Length: 137
Image (cartoon, rainbow, N blue to C red; front, side):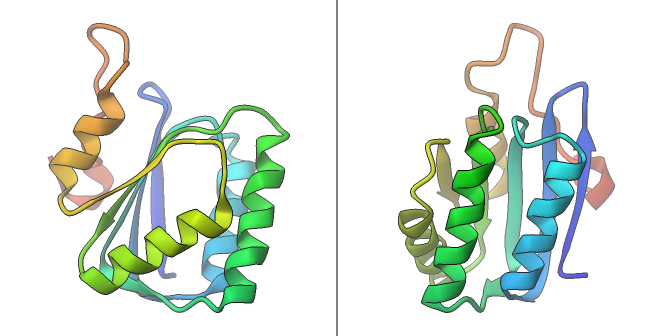
């Protein structure tokens, strides 16, 4: 399974780690899981330091349509993507422009900055916790 993810309901945070080549089905399975777990409004971090996107233009358009359809269900949480290479950074930037969703998305080079960005605006005493499910923190 190329995307493994976990949820911290107390922090309203989904932490995901991708490995290998991600195709349309991998992204759609991830989105289906987020919807089934009722976490679309949660903040999300996707660690892509050990993966790459293998999506055609048609794939990106179809996934973008699904993400925009999710917006009709309620507010979407911010998304932080951690890119491990220039290629992944560029592909995620292209994906972001195709999706054109109304939720914040930002691409980072390291996890610490990604989690810090997700923590902005949280109530005092709340933090965007590092995902212990992946051995971090």
